[in-house]
Image 1: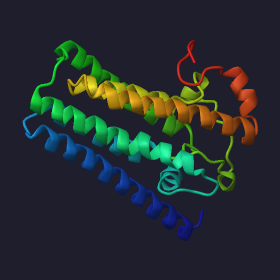
Image 2 (image 1 turned 180 degrees about the vertical axis):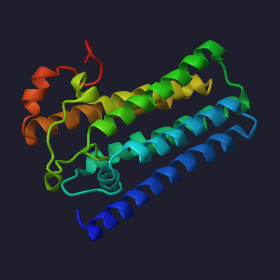
Image 3 (image 1 turned 90 degrees about the horizontal axis):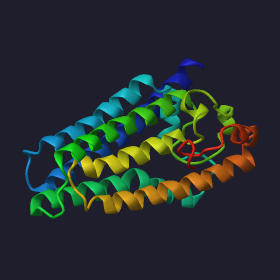
Image 4 (image 1 turned 60 degrees about the vertical axis):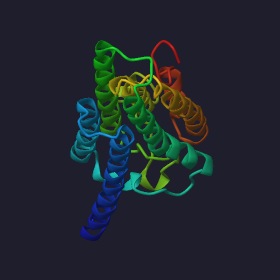
Length: 232
């Protein structure tokens, strides 16, 4: 990679990270605005975990992948772009707003501290699994497309030896853990809707890879499960 190309990759990667940080800031702002208060320890912990995850991705993920994720490449379907926006942007926003309102108006039912702690662990594990998938797969794009110009190939190492879509599995874990961590039973409603979108996206991506990515069908016969070993 020459100096000019390397500079372009870094610029695109920084642009992508800036978008991710801006999105996390919006989610955090809406969380506290909806709650109407700043003295919310688990709210700050939730936002803090998001930024720790962003910082960790900048350290361990291939800069070329960060650059790839910064923009929509060729061959992307409009439906997948919509599903990606719902999963990565609208879902977290809806969860944060509902959780904040839940705290402000003290909606019932209340979640116990023990369940809240389990939710925090789920969020952390979800981020770890997703980061592991990103570090293992240099083709972990933000949208579904065959990255021919990057030599797209099947990845079978790391979490991909266990399930075919570990990144989505991690996002589902963090999405379901967030309402519990924020002690909001009602925030499970947008969380469940977001998970449904992720499952649909998993099915559509799997079909695309089976049809268009060389070697993926053989890989799918060896690694049978999409998201959860022994289940689906």
